[in-house]
Length: 115
Image 1: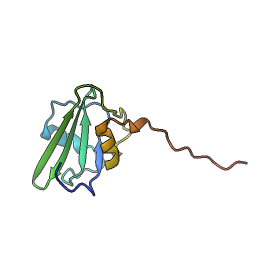
Image 2: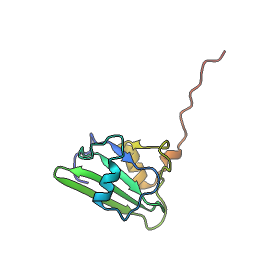
Image 3: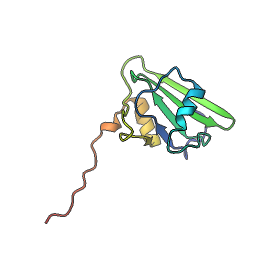
Image 4: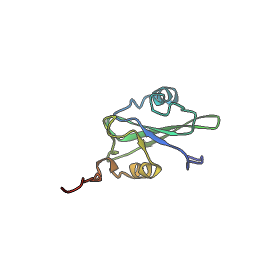
């Protein structure tokens, strides 16, 4: 990835994606995301059923770029439902690529007033 990604949003497609899809097929799936402007330079990330491959699709000035990572052992942490996660931060993307499962991290507890 060579662009300026400081203002880029990162979207995940929860659940498995058919990794036989290339740029054309993945760009059609990316249109289902909340930010439908697939030419914005945002990153759209897909994972296969075995969770050992990721594909990242983004628009770079004059064409789509497709980046792929395949693990030889281990699995990527990956949400299976739409409610689990759809947009992540760039920091969470770094964690995802290194294998940190932030999807199951401790949640913030909120307490009401004591009566």
